[in-house]
Amino acid sequence: DRNMVPIEFKYKQVSEDAEYTNPHELLEHEGINIEKEGFIYIYVSNESLQPVTVYFDDLLVKHTYGKIVAGGDYYPFGLEINERMITREKYKYGYQGQYAEKDSVTGWNHFQLREYDPVVGRWLSMDPKGQFKSPYLGFGNRPGNGVDVDGGVFNDDDYYIYSDRTIERVETGPVDNYYYVDGDNVIPLAQGLERNASGLIQIPQSLNIDRNGVCFAYQVKAGQYDRAFMHPDAFAAFLGAVAQTGFTDVVVNQFSYANGTSPSPSTSHINGRNGDIRLLKENGSGLNGTVYDLDFSFYRSADLTEAFSQFGWTDILSAMTPFGVMLPGTREYENHHNHIHLQGFRPNITTIDPIQAPFSGVISR
Image (cartoon, rainbow, N blue to C red):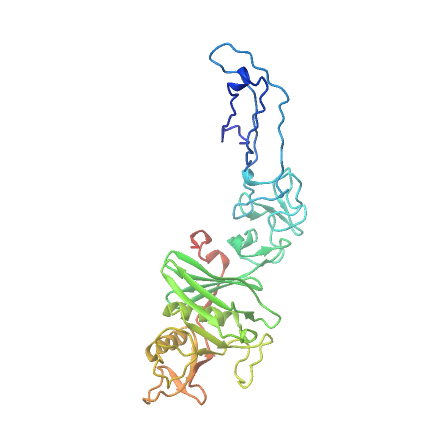
């Protein structure tokens, strides 16, 4: 390697035919893949046990380059992993995508507004935007969750959804990341959801989570993806509720359009806070059904309704079952026999400083 520590040794031996029947022998070695920077030591040697004259001639080493001419890997806060850097050609865009970012003398990263030291993960001058409590804090202590394009503002929002039904929000930018926190496990749910001009996100069309004992799934109703825009707070509460049930057949019928308006004929689905969720069946198929169907799962639908209530929806509409019973915590409303309607959103969300957020080093992937 680059420190002269041997990694691999190979040789090609002259055969006896070269001495007795064929005084000239062509020796070729199969290709060697060079996987990291370092040195290659090539030599010819006569190590015969008996005295014999051997002549070597026309030694040729052919170096075939790979298609990648520049690249590299970094530690979380931007320090280069030297043995994994490809520098055949100079690449002028570094860790955060800044032009000619790294200073070859100091090792600091040049940003438009200030200098950054990747060894300690801190800026070398105060934050001109005053984003965090510490003016020297690098990327909110969460460098993998967003980008700081000029040394001023780190762009992302993080939602930490806890198994005790509380939600913490780290509010720093227009890109939202969602995590479920269960004990020491911080489990990524949905990443890099960018808010539009109306402050809404288009939720993933489907999500299937099965990590560290946390298992749930949902999907958006076919053909309704243009109505799958939610307020970021509402999506955090939605994920928490579905995670609490552990159900894998939850279907989102609709929330809002991209501009925050309500899909017709409904008028209350505004600003991505109110929405419709399909009732659940006994077989877990996720197919459409009503409270009148024999395979309607009253108890599973009741668990789902209760979870939504616990995560902040205070007014949930549904329909009376043939047995004269309502889903717990809901009130009767016409034309709601095949879904529950969530409204009256008052979530338990606390905004915290980035330095208080769960440490990214315990994230489970």
